[in-house]
Length: 512
Image (tube, rainbow, N blue to C red; front, side):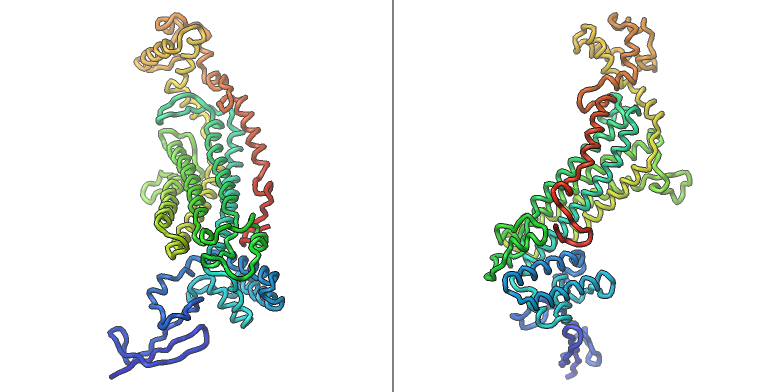
């Protein structure tokens, strides 16, 4: 019988060898080195995890993303343990020094987070034990990976809510500038993609301002609803250690601890809510992109996208394509997919934690990065985009966008609106047959259709009058728009993050 030699490495420096029966995949004359991955469990197991199972189960490839949050949560946990007398001051100091050293070395590129570890938690703990010895083994006292990962994900998501909010606010500032500069820029308003009534570019862009403003309100609501600390919930039933969960929550900037340990480790509502808000943001971006793509077409020519945000064709030299707008529109489905994925994952999970919930991370991370990238690029594209005001105004003068105002003119002279509606319908048909607009007709031609018309009808149906006389709240008239713009400017001087005492650093999950 021939035997091969298997060389097994534990952690970094310790090996042992044993004999191995040859198989179809292993030859007797070859040595195969396997790595026993550092992990936080295994005492009750009698054999090693199959490598494929280990790889399938491991999350280090993506949960390394909240390395900073894992360190931050561990620091708060250790400080609390020492306060409660569960750790000595010497143990606390040694662990904190070790954790801050690991964080610094990773940030400076001196220490790599490698995939020999099962997850970010095992990486941090293994490195801590290597550096400070026995005291490092006490880091995990009073907590489980279940409440640890729940904390890390919550800290990470909470921080990203603020990052996305800042990007949306930056976009709102750009939209407000466009509104301020275009209260006199006339353009057609559409329904069913058909010209309907004249508006201004300020009014049209103001509609998107309202959408993104609502997006910020959603982010604010999500932040406060999720801002409770799950650390101390243990695996699902708390712990017998005398933890001060209120103190831990305050150290991490939370409003308080979560109140049910089972829900604490199995709750991903905040992820679903955030992905839903991100999906809505992408829907708004996609709608705006759709209009920009249409406006950029040769048939409309309302806008010219800056060269920095356009691409060309490999075969057609004349082309200037709105690729950024198209990609933002396309990536909307990617973010929707993340939302549907986590909803589908969570729908059949019994209490409490189940491994299915590991699926909350990769798609969430990707969705967050996608939305942040789309917001930054879209803002730059809109900020540098040129509006062809003369073409917009000329388009607004075509397509009978003043037909409603012509009907209102008749109503003002005692004609019932339903009758006035019929008269203007016949008038539009008359103009279509003669390929002209209402204002091109002579007064005699107008009177043939309705004797109520007088010479002042031409002023009543002019483009400027059609827009400027609309002064109700939220209407496109210049006076109404100026009031809205002032209100929006005042809104942007306030920031809910500052007003409510949220002081989040950009590179960690720490709180106040």
